[in-house]
Image 1 (spheres, one colour):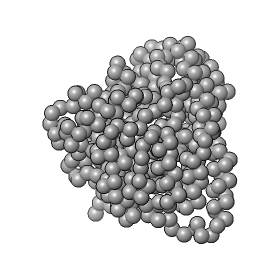
Image 2: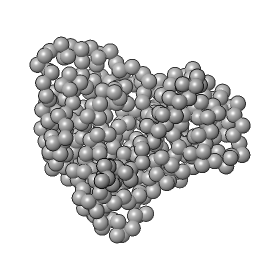
Image 3: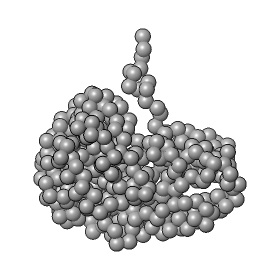
Image 4: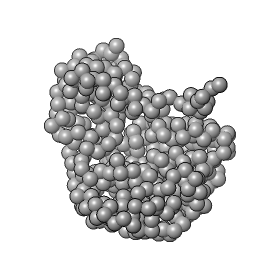
Length: 391
């Protein structure tokens, strides 16, 4: 008897889990490892959010199950945030759903949206969860190539006529992970025009919506007139408010799709702990001053590392947002061999680009998730390495 389903047996281990295991092994050997792999902000959750959590934890009425779709206070806060930040009107009851982090929501959303054998268009390179969630839902992956020469902005004309006709769902992700690419509203206008023509549901993953630099502000796909008919958008407080471990996010947009996801989730989970939702509502209702301060810190780190990488001959674009740099692998290496060399010889963890799809080959992703002092150490370690010439 086979004890494990074929879906799981065909699913590779989550790459970041494997990287963590290698990190733990090196730490056990006494190696000073600098982890620039996973996208987890090192900055603390703002104190006013923690204070709201502590206040609500003391209220025993909050220890019960939350409503399956999330508490009204949080959903109203999400709707108010969209109204103020994007001038988008949302009905908190039908067009907002609380998630236990956007990763969970995306995975369940795909299962709620497609039938086995239906096609899903996903960015390549792109967040690995899109690909694995389509696999688990029995869908067929259609790669949407993202090209550096086009700013990692999708070109829908690269899709075949058959894939355009047969696809049920498409994902976009801006500001982008892993490429750190950003777009203007016209990209979303083009996307909505495309999915309207081909009757495709579209989801934009906006986990990094508030993590932006300079004057750039990331648009919402829901700002496109009529977008709600075809679109949903996923948001997270993990990166904007340093709340990764709190596991709180949301999805907004098309009410029919949100109702389907709510139905699925009600059979799987019981929403997030009420005090966490209340604390998250406080975060979204704030003046976002802490977000601006976080962005100032991440931008300074980005400038430092960008300058250091260029000095040693590594090609890397300067992003307008996210907590990542997307850099080119030096000649003579694959993304995996270069990442392995950095880990073994310099104690530096980066993520090989191939982890994000075949179009990620030739690149590696660096998270701006350590202090400036540690980033200077990263640059010094790289300068001491003899890596030109490959393996």
